[in-house]
Structures are given as C-alpha cells and as structure tokens.
Length: 471
Image (cartoon, rainbow, N blue to C red; front, side, top):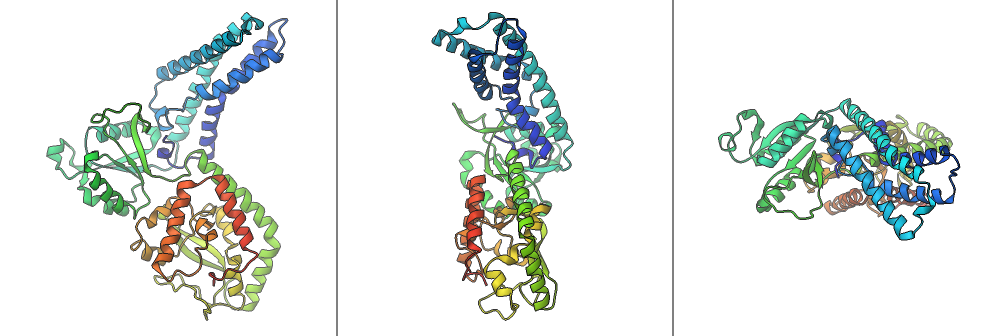
C-alpha cells in the first residue's frame, strides 16, 4: 500500500520503481528469445511466441518485488529478497507446466531450451532485483528532506514501528515522540523527551511544528477518542494513518497496507504519491507548456489592453496557500484598480466599483487566470485542483469549516471540480464555501488522469460563455 509514506518522490526514483515492475517480465522474455535463437536448429517460431506471451503475463503478475509495499522493500534483507524471487519463479514454472500438461503441447518445445531458460532466468532476476533495490535505497537515502512523525498512543505496536522507522534510514522519517494521556512512569518511557504531551495537546503541536505524518495507535474500543482526534487534526495538512493493534485482534485474511512490516490503514493522504505524482506533474507541464505556446498572442494582447486601459501593473501578484499549506505567489492579469494582499481582502461583487474597464470581462471569462500557467510550470500550482484562496480568506474559513485544510494536501489548481460545477465567484454565504470545499475533497477522493482531462475540457468550454457568478 504505502508508497505514500515515503512522501513525494523524484522522477528518477519513480522511474526505478517502474523498472522494478516491468524488469522481471522483460528479463524472462529476453532470456527466452536469446536462448531459443542460440540453440542450434531451434527457431523462435509461433510455439515459442505463445510461451513468451504467457510467461510475460505471469511474470507481470507473480514477479513483482514491490507487491508488499514500497516502504517494506527497505525492511527486506538480501537473503529474503533472493528466496522470495526464487519462490515466485518456481511458482511461475509450476503454472507453465500445468498449462503445458492441460494443452498437451509440452512435447513441441526443445527440452534443452526450456531447461536453460528455467535455470538461468532466476539468476538474472536475482541480480537485477538486488541492483535495482540497492539503487532505490540509495536514491531514497539521498532524498533532500526528512519528514517528521508523531504517534497518538504509546503502546507495543507504536513503539515497534517507531523503532523500525528510526532504524531504517531510507524511509527518511524522524520520529519526534508520542502523545498519551498516561505518564512516562506508567508507560515505561525512560527518556521523558519522547513523551511530547497528552492527546489533547497533539493538534496544537502538529500545527506549531509542521508535523508531516501522524500514526494513530489508539485501541478500537476508544473509537470516540479517535474520532475526536481526527476532527482536531482536520485543520492541519498532516498525513494520518491508523495503526491497528495486531497483538489484540485475531485478524484472518485481513487486507491492510504496511509500513516496514507493520499493518496500517490510511486515513488521510494525498492521492499524488509515487508514480501518480509524476504522472500528474508530467500532464501539468506538457499541457501548460503547450497552452502557453498556443495562447501567447492572446496573452500579449490582454497584457497590452490591461496596460493601456488603467494605471498599475499588468500582472497582479497575491499570496495564497499552496501545497501543505505553504504560502505561494499566484499570478493573475490585474482586473481591479486595487492590489489587495493584506489581512483583510474584500471579495469582488456584482457591479464592483474597483473593476477596471476590461476587468469585468476578464473575470467573467476567467481570462484573468491565464498567467497561472506560469505557476504550473514553476510547480507551485497544478492545472486541476482546489482553487487557492487569499491568505486572509484561508485564515477566516479554516476556523469555520471542518476539514478545510485537507484541500491543501495537493497543489492548488487553475480550475477544479468545484468550478466546473458552478461553485465560483463571490462566496457571500458560508454554505457557498462549504460547497466548494466539499467538491475539493471529492476531487481528492476520486482523482484520476481522466477526471483531470474532463475538468480541463469543461473549463475550456466555459471560456466561450460569460459566467454570471464571476464578477
């Protein structure tokens, strides 16, 4: 499950991960072709093509070194990795033998080819997996940023995971300590610095020190306490995982993810971890770059019109909250005679006297947002995501709407699910902002590349009609 526990990974690291997925199938296929063509009087004909197709499909299903979770690969030693690879290769051979027996076509294959393929392929697989695993470890160790973690509840399970996180450098997570309502003496904690406070103190600590990851290790019988804790943490951007007590519950065929062999349940996390984050970023860069190229004449025209129709800068810059609640600078074509960016910002209203001569048109058609394509290329924004609000508005609404800050688990977008569903323009009523936030969280739950493309297309169609809600 938990590539996500490793945080946002580099393009090279994700490329190595993808190589680990496809390498076993490519090795099995390539080795079969090499051996077949090297044995005298043997041709890589239709019969071997069918074997190659079946073995490649089985390799993709069975020979996945990362099927236990991205973080767990760092807990494996070399012996475990070798034995696991050999066991999965034997399982693949058994399935192939069963298929050959059922189809009664095994006699058509050269026995020397099959023997050499069956014996040499696992050797190559083991070498490749060891090399790729070592490369993944090295890349993870060189990650520039450590993440910090705290535990809600101090018990055998949470202390085991804390010890494993501390001992595994590749995970790059620093354990700050535990929160528990019991005292250090009762918990058996020798170093009192590990006990950071009681459970009610956790939310304030997380916000003050910018904690990245929270593991909730409270027993299920304290379900109300878990619910209350999650409510308090909704005003943060921390990733939250539930750590079930496997020593208390007799789990049978349970399906959970794991972190270093410890089962966890994701409760709040970004959808853009691992390769998903790379796919999202590549989509943003490609489409934003192409859009800037195609729209450059329009951007130049709007710039000249803004410049010569009212005094002031062409581009309006405003502080907003971005990924993980960090401040970013967002660019827009100036549509007003003022450039507000203080502790109090008045939203634009219908017939607003502050609008310039072309400001109303720019805002109603969303053309004023086009400079944010530069934000996308910078990496501070995405094409699709929750719309960033001014810092003053964020501070206002985070106190009024439960779960408001969860929308900052991803980069803010030029457009979003809320906007294409009519939630844009002035939010004079609290219910209007609540509707926006509900759509933003829905987007986080159901993100896919197809959903992004659908939202981009709907936004493009909106450019050809003036929106009465945007002024």
